[in-house]
Image 1 (spheres, rainbow, N blue to C red):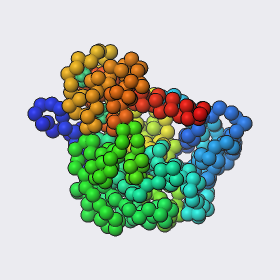
Image 2 (cartoon, protein in one colour):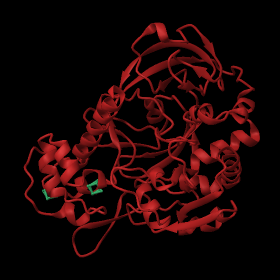
Image 3 (cartoon, rainbow, N blue to C red):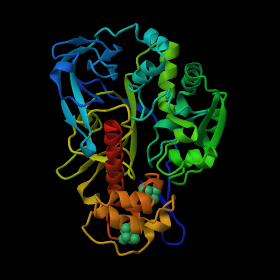
Image 4 (cartoon, rainbow, N blue to C red):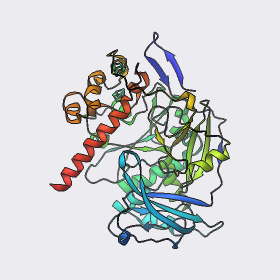
Length: 426
Ligand code: SF4
Ligand code: SF4
């Protein structure tokens, strides 16, 4: 369960879960069919470079469109059976590639060699397929050169244990990953951020180690950059703008494993958060539909229960249990319909709880008035929308159950999209 301690009665102080060292990983068998999402809208059949009926191998580096740099590195060997459009959150469009797997199919043994030879944007595109990567992770970004790399050994949302598990059990691969990234980027300044209990494991990687207290949201990438690396992130800017690239330990370990053993980064570590708040760590082939994992763990999902990808504070509800495991599917959370927080169409009562808990000092009680009316420019210009570090605490404490965080995410998405369209048309 989410651990709360109380300073007075309110607001609550939430604590990250600490890894229980006896925790083991349950491996899920690769299913008969997997789905990959390519981060490009499927609009024109003519631009596709792969077709249903094509045979592909795990470890191929496949260009999917003739007008895009995106590549797909399949985690399985098999036959493409479908390619279709998929609409995700906030109307983001992907191309979904379905593959029928061939048991004991041959993998592409050249993958490791190709990976080690890749550089610049080709390397970035391959790494986007690695476990633990978040969509904006780009190893080499000449537009935003950074001087420091932080490896997070703690996940930024509650209850998720993936990165702690990696530090505890795969530190040699993390070390190899650091060595590869040093050569690929020329950056020498690495810091591993872990809870105090994992400091000695992290130290064996031979780079600087900093510890983070387990109070939420200390492991937020923004707070790590500011509080641990001592760099100010300006509102609306990223940690990279402050010279710091943050990469999950899981991704660094996957890079290390490929660079040393020439394997294929085909599996994703996932924390499954059950209805009672207990957790299971599982490893699944990327592309595995979530319903395969739920049936393996014998978790029943009934009508009106909710499936969430991500953690309790910042995760996103999904509408189908056929949704596949993606490189950034760090957690799958099942909420019983009785436990789903009520979302009410109430007006803000100006209680101020969201303001008191906000770690970024955003005047949330004022901001919400503009967000509810769709006045996003006003919210950004005068009410610190972009100072928000996306922790979700405001929605958690809201006395009248306003989905404040969802309003914030929508507003940021809309403004970013408008800016991108304006830049493209300039
Ligand atoms: S999500 Fe809410 S509480 Fe968290 S930083 Fe943003 S405005 Fe503040
Ligand atoms: S917690 Fe909810 S009701 Fe209270 S001030 Fe914030 S938005 Fe308004």
